[in-house]
Length: 234
Image (cartoon, rainbow, N blue to C red; front, side, top):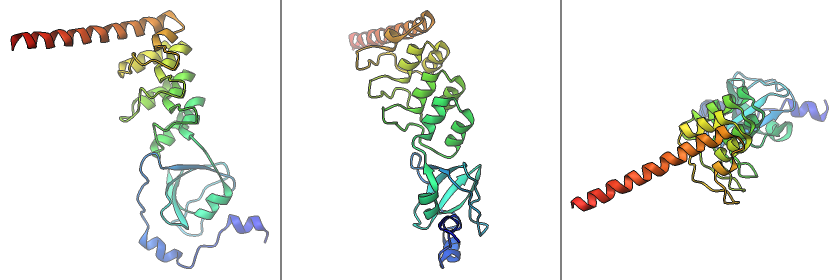
């Protein structure tokens, strides 16, 4: 038996059966703490509680509280995975939500959402998955992200750009409209002191942003007038 075969079929520790009785339903990790890996080899389980997966499958690890057996999900099935297998025979995937959004891979994005991968995580440039969906013009991806109740619309990256800046600059008027309908802020300036309106590369995007910016200014003036009227009546 060579080294690889030993690693592919790790031996359960002697307390394995008692551990399963005590921790058959470990708690889910809070959102944003799910770790994502790609399996480099197929894993054949030895007990019903262990998770079967094949080479290339995406593994979502939701609980690592036990040092020997981690709780994971693959293709909608949940089970236990030997932690040493993940450490030695799987490839970590950084920012899977971002990768799915960037590529317009809707099925992978939905899988990330279903497995509680953090919706507002930032990559090295400070971008969110929403930013990449807007930057790539992936309307279906943006729809899914905007449907999440806790999605952050106005996160600025290291250049100060928001998702709205990206959509305006790339000329995706349909996505600009989607963001505005969710009340994305139009008054945020990036590091070059530019509004999304000033980044717009076509007339349709500019028109949508002007209209929204104008309505916000009108609303502000109206609120100020109401405040003054109330003050005068006192």
